Image (cartoon, rainbow, N blue to C red; front, top):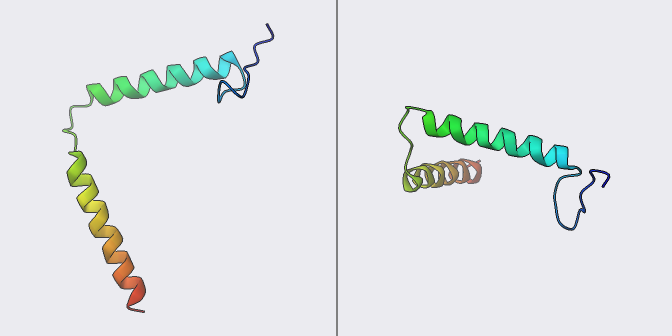
Amino acid sequence: MDGKLDPRISEFESFEDAERYQKWFREEVEASLSDPVPSIPHDEVFAEMDALIAARRRARHAR
């Protein structure tokens, strides 16, 4: 096998690319899980984003 992945099966060009991504992803998850800062609840994030989007729309239409 030449190390190439079929693009119909994988988004990565090679096994090395896939392994490198998996390593990076695992490190990111571990860092997040070990972060002592409290997480922000999903609903709170979306409420803040909805308010920000609404404010920007109002500002754009007020011009």
